[in-house]
Each structure stands twice: as structure tokens, then as C-alpha cells.
Length: 443
Ligand SMILES: [Zn+2]
Image (cartoon, rainbow, N blue to C red; front, side, top):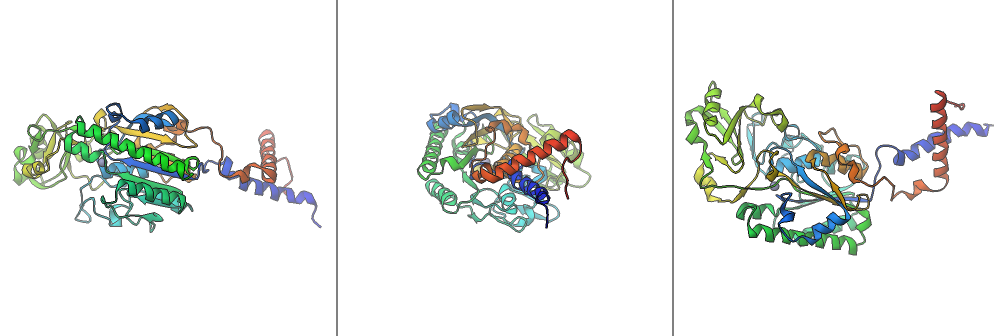
């Protein structure tokens, strides 16, 4: 018959296994994480408008002064960075419009083919791979099968689904489906910023309207009993600056003879150029003759942009100064006359965006320093208690937003026999450290 002492090691191992959830690095905080994006919400819009609900978030949660987004500061690259923690050159969504020389195909924002999207692992997939559930009420990439998986509930992008309907769907995902991680996307105030410009009254009105949706969301979380179970993060993908299509719009053919260029890709604050073989330097020199555009040989693109190591970045890359536009067809661009634009250098303050967070695990009334959008993915993974995939961000930059950890969900771990076992295992660990060897018999 076995001596009772022989069971002790088994109990210790059991205790160690059971307590890993609370004492290991990966642990879950509140039940749900809800990530909301309001497109094109510049960091300082808040100061221009009456925003009582954003102010409420600031008072009861975390507000970062601003977020530095990935380059280029465009919707698809930036949203995919926030959800994967990767720079654009690493996740491969290097633009809203791209050319891939291996595929010999063009990507537009309606491209859902997996082969374009397999350079990163979105948080909704990381969650699913580790046994959690996820849902997306829109997000770039959320309609795509990645690593053979999709969110548990997702929608094809459709702007006719009203903002009120989106809020109701998200509440349903949290309350009824009980999904662990949920995203919600609004295409404003970006659209208004393009139409009337970031300094317009129309923009201020739109910001105040978006503030009302924040109020509605908070109200719905409260009345549905979700307030204490949801860590809510509110972000944006880029800012907005004034553009001038009368005086600051340049057609590339004004600078470079057509015979020297094989292909141009994308327009606006940037352009990729494929020169005719042997004409690379001639094309670069011609573009650089204009004082407000800078053409780089691919290898010379500044390292700080993290925007060169990808085949979808063409041999010559053109960056416009703030407010300037480069196009392949002036009439085409003017047909969609716009007062505001983005996609410019992510160092510009006009390209910075908002960040707010509120919920049981976020500090109240915490003025957070600026951080980078690559840091969002590791924060989301931390809140979900899952291991992040390799990424360019760091939890170190956001960890201070959180209250000291306390496991709100798993009371199971905190009481009774398991706690005694945990205490016992900690004692054993102490003994081990003190003596440099095990102080009890294993067998
Ligand atoms: Zn955007």
C-alpha cells in the first residue's frame, strides 16, 4: 500500500498546473474585449467639439494623448497593424490599393482572397486558435479566411447597416453569443473629413454625432449588464489634414516622361512606380525635381517607416509633403474633389489618432502617454489571456494602463482547497530557491 506521502508530489504538480492560469504570464481579465474603431478620428478633434461621452471615457478610463499609426497612414494597412501588431511591410497589406508582382494582380479594398492576407495573424484568429471565440462587426481582413479560420460571427462590409444596428449586433455578440473578442467599425468621421476637411463645421458636427454613438454604446453595455464584463478599447486608424486639389495636385506625367515608366500603383499622399529597365535613376531625379515630393529607391526608404521589405513595395516609392497629392490622372482625382486626406508621414501630428479604454481592468482617469498602434495587439492578447503571435509591438508600452491584476472571473482559483494547494506549491518553490535543490522526495 502506498504511503500517503507519495501523493504529495502529485498534489504539488496538480496545484502548479491549476495555478498557472493566475500566476503564469497568460491569464484572462474580464470576460470580453470590445475593440471599436472610428475611422479617421484625429487625436485633437476632441478639443474642437462637444464630446461629453468621450469626456466620460477620459474620466473613468484611460485616454492616451495620441497614437502614432503605422506608415502609410491609410485605412487598410493601419487597421491590419492594430489587429496584428505588425508593421505594414510585415503583414503585407502595404496599401488600400496594391500590386503583387508574384501574383501579377491588383489588390483593392474589396479583395478577400486569403493569399493577400496571410502575412499576419489578426487577434480574432489568435483567439480562436487558443480556444476562445471572436466576432467582427466589420474590420479590414475580417471577411477573409486566415490560417483556415474565421471569426465565429462576421459580416461582409456593408455601409447600409446603420450605426444603431451595428451597436445592437455587437451587444448581441457579447450578451447572447458570449464571444470573447469582438470588433466594431465605424467609417466616420473619416468620410466627413475627406468631404469637408478637418477644420470644417461639418467635421465638428460629425464628431459630436460619433460622440453620441459612444454614449449609446456605454448605455447599452450598462442596461445589458455587460459593463463589468467588458474591457472596451476605442481607437482610430489615422488622422486627417487639409488638401488642395487646385494648387497642390501634381500629375506624375508633369514630372516624368511616360516612356520611362512601366507602371504606377496607388495615388494620393504616396505612389509606387515601376520604371522601365535602366531608367530608375532618371525617374527618381525627375520626381525629386519637385520640391514637395520625395522619390526613394526602394532600398533607401527610411528605416523608421518600416516600409521596404515586401515585394508589394515597388522599386521607386514617392512620398508627398503634407497636403500635397500625386496622381496618374488629374481629372480622375478631381472628379472626387476632397478637402481632407491622409496617408502622409506618420511623424506628422495631423496623422495621429485617438485612443481610449474603459472597463474593469483599466485604470480610471489615467492620462496615458502616446504609444504606437503596433502595441495594440499585444494589449488585446494580454486582456484575452492568450499568447500573441510574433509582432512588432510591446506590452511594456501599455501595461501601465491596467490596474494591478486581479482575476475577476475565476473565483474557483481563489478559494478553498485549490488555494491551499497553490500556497503549498509556492512554499515548495521557495524551498527550492533557498536550497538550490528539491527539499522533498519525489518518490
Ligand atoms: Zn481610415
